[in-house]
Image 1 (cartoon, rainbow, N blue to C red):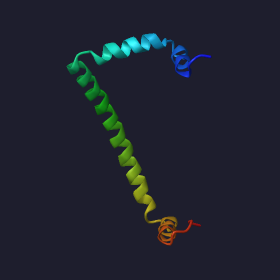
Image 2 (image 1 turned 180 degrees about the vertical axis):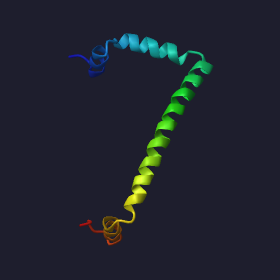
Image 3 (image 1 turned 180 degrees about the horizontal axis):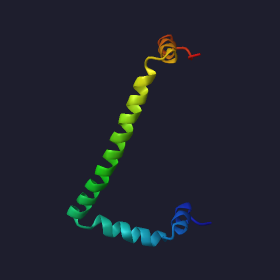
Length: 83
């Protein structure tokens, strides 16, 4: 029986040996290049999170004034399930 990890690599067209060689080369690559790539990816992720967070917080704020929210807070304070 084969290793489940090998099956995943085969499905995406990469053998486990090729993946291991690539990861080894990457780990010994230029620190500046790796750091720059990481900074680029993190910048994109931060922008996405900030956009989603702004929308999420705005929608959550709209909920605060509803009767449902008041009932949920009351139920939480009384340690019971909201109706």
